[in-house]
Length: 420
Image (cartoon, rainbow, N blue to C red; front, side, top):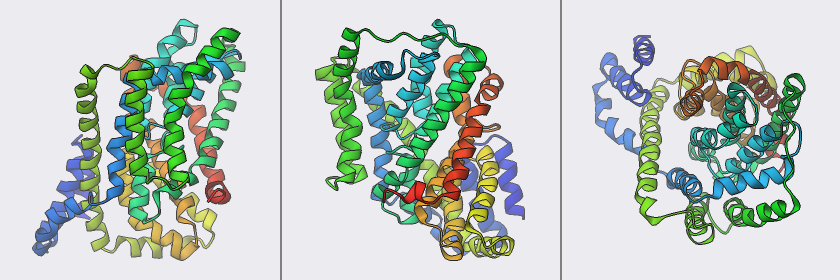
């Protein structure tokens, strides 16, 4: 109990979550009097990172940075204009469609929200959209990033659950399309209420130019997904190939990328990926303490007393994780809950690890947009100078759509396993 109190106290004092996890694990060792665990402390800290699959995380981050710097992002936005730009609320649809394309490359929700907020919100404001709604669409589009492959959180889940990462990527395709469809419906309904302006279809010459110039940018997701699904490359290797492709396309096709900017790109990637990897290391350390205390067995016994129905079990998990995601970073929470709940899901309820992974990942990522932590919410706020409360209010329909998607995936396993 004292360990739990220390954890909550450090968390609410605003101490960085990685430090909270490391200090809490250290407190447990001293408070339990089991000082022999100190011999394994540093070893457990590093062992959480000893996985080849985790190398995909900085590589996918690098791909996103190179795409943004090399002009690939704006070409994908123009491709979206060709298909949805002329509808009422056209820029809102363009925003979401562009987010779908970026989701198939970025893998990081926070990075996607930051990039797309700078690219789309000013344009929507010029067309007469209010800033909170424009920012909310962009932030909601970031929820697609951890679901539509590639996905950093799927990489991590695959490592934790010993499930092939390529299979997790495939499992995310149908849920990602379901989410996008629900978001399009939300935009349509909100547009009926607020009467957003009619968009303009590109001219035939513009359509031809946008599609032609979008082909090289579209090769990046094709390289990632195609190489994984055909077995030509592992997810890590596909991320490396995508980084090289983004660099070459930005430099020699679009000619927007300058080698003088490469150091800054690598520096940003190193800083952002190191933050994620330190979090993974300390969360793995904390997870070691939880397993040592036999929390998974206790949780299994407790949940098994409540229900025998797999769907009800998943709903219980979703309810708990919605609360967890509000106060913990999604990656840290994933590392903590997978060792506890995955064995219960598989052994007690016969739930596929792919379905469980999609449900858990999507539920935890929803915490990016919910207070009090809400990293994605505050990133969108800082990028657009919009109060978080106003963004959250505009986000509510998208949050409800996401919860609906989670419920459907929990109820219909084939949404996650149908393509496997």
